[in-house]
Image (tube, rainbow, N blue to C red; front, side, top):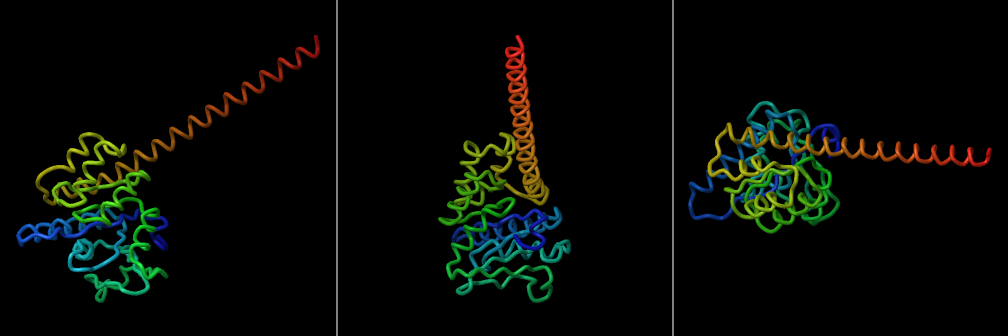
Length: 237
């Protein structure tokens, strides 16, 4: 992400409301999305969104993010194609300073969407269908920190299952936690903290790899030095 996203943590919001005849189920999904938005703002992380389509949960995440009163300037990154877009997000008119608008030259929203996944620091996956499944699999392949809720259904449930076997940033207990049947504000706050936990895991691995590389280089230098000494001794005998 450009601007604040270069130094701030940026979480992509991926997914949509799974079509249901039960309005209570739909409203529960929207409430969960709004609470995630609030908790992400409280955690001082940026969010990346793509569409305010009525079936999208992104607009509700943005609504909770803005309503928290904790959103920073340019902390809501909106990526959208140059045409055929829906970006009427809550708070965009009243608090435009919170939004970082990034138009893509491509007319295809999928190109903007998938390309951005290589730049984000994490993915929140709720519900969703085909594009959500592809996005989640991309995240797993590139070891992006992911929070996917099993009970949100759709592709999020599929990605949650995949996290248990193919994503090594979550512990068994953390993965089980994301499979819980109910979600309240406290549980959603804990889920948001899993982004930091996964980033910490990545940093530890990078540090361990760096240490191992330094050790290998040191062994190589010692081996080269010993070879030179042996050569010198042999030439002086």
